Amino acid sequence: MSSSELLLTLNNKALNLLQEDADKIEKLIEVQMENLTTRQCPLYEEVLDTQMYGLSREVDFAKRAGLITDLAGKQIISKLERNLAELYEALNQKK
Amino acid sequence: MSSSELLLTLNNKALNLLQEDADKIEKLIEVQMENLTTRQCPLYEEVLDTQMYGLSREVDFAKRAGLITDLAGKQIISKLERNLAELYEALNQKK
Image 1: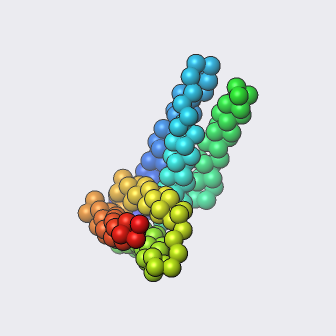
Image 2 (image 1 turned 90 degrees about the vertical axis):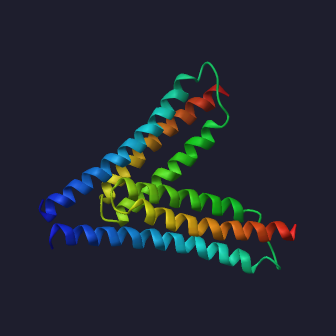
């Protein structure tokens, strides 16, 4: 494998790993959205905040390690932040 | 640069970045140790826990991305955990 192929492989791997972790958070948000009308777990916000912090540290590390671009990192985080904002809005309307 | 040189460069870079972040936590622990007899900030434990969690996520990501070995990751974390344990022990003796 040439250097540029190796770099591409590592970059793709890093991006896929981050996307996997982002998908897990996405799933947590979806589950809570579906449960809006039935039950709410008070620890959900705490768990989501912690997970978001963890992911942001991973993304930041991947950027510093030269594995992903600034833009790719921002896209992963901002998509989740929009979904989180929707969830919190929906939760507030329930209150 | 050959593939193996590139990989070595990326591995070293990843390890250095993780060590930098570990050093920051180490510094936080030292500062709190020095302040044991003067003042204690109640948020310190919270901050340290959060920082440790963030670092563990970075280390885990670096392992999964194939940048560092399991052993290297464990060494970074366990050294900090020992220092943290010492700090908490010292804090408990003060109580």
